[in-house]
Amino acid sequence: MIGWSAKIINVYLKIACYLGGLGREGLERCIHPPLDGSLSRELKKRKIKIAIPTIKSINDYLVYSKIIKEIEKYTEAKGWSLIEIEKYWDPKN
Image (cartoon, rainbow, N blue to C red; front, side, top):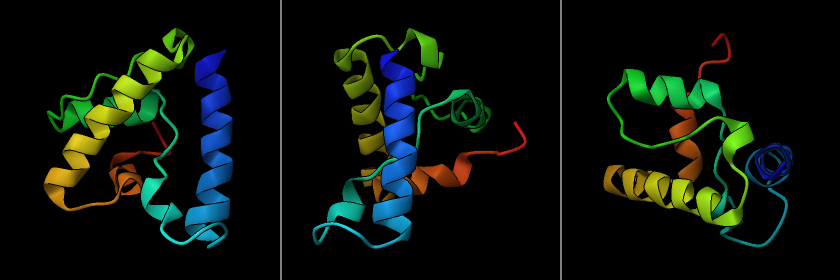
């Protein structure tokens, strides 16, 4: 349930903060894309080692925060904001 709840919140925040510009200054740099199987598959195709399990298996905040930390390391190394990893998400997948 944690994974699904987080995904719904992330979709809302992405639209409101990143796309809509709502919220405090700098908030858009903290927003990351929803974690799902599509993003996981696309990262694996590109040999990016970020362990996103199935959304059903994200059952506590510790698992969730570990995934976000992995994404942060990757995006910081690229000079990207967190949300920019979404460029690897494939809506058809």
